[in-house]
Length: 117
Length: 118
Image (tube, rainbow over all chains, first blue to last red):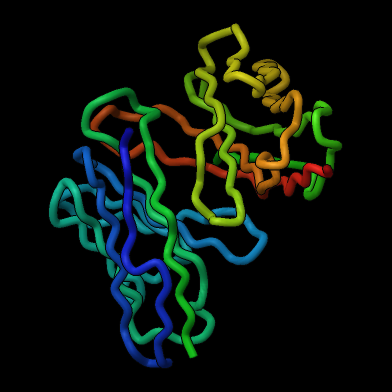
């Protein structure tokens, strides 16, 4: 089956530093990847949608200069949290939509826990 | 805008019993998909079941089935013969159909925390 990986699974960083999270589709090509943020015991909030080779589309209220998204290939999208602060601490989840298959073919990564000290 | 509502923040069920999780949604779209995802303590999102809006027949996957009422915009999940491994957060999600070459955005409900009691 289709597998999406995220790296790292858990990262701790100091306030003011930048952190990059990778999302990879391991056995399929993904035209579109989505980035979500999830606070404890809450739902997934869509941050942005990224299409391979084009600029990401950010949801209202999400700072595009703070959360840099790059979708350089059909198997890799990255989310960089720039100048991270404690309030950015959260669980970040990506999902990928397969190039082939029906429109409802979307697979989730295992998530990345970010802790900013 | 699409909204998805799960009115039950927490539920519990005895092992081997049946439980129903509710979900309602609001949309002006006619063609869309509905999903139930499970998120166990590992936080990995797992697809439980999906329903195409144009299909009148309710989807079924082993012990999981849905009651899809399109006119009422209701999409409940029934779990039969509950097992301890069913303990998780359950999210209802809506996806409208767009151009096949663009992303199909999910809208998630707030989730229901289900606990299966031994």
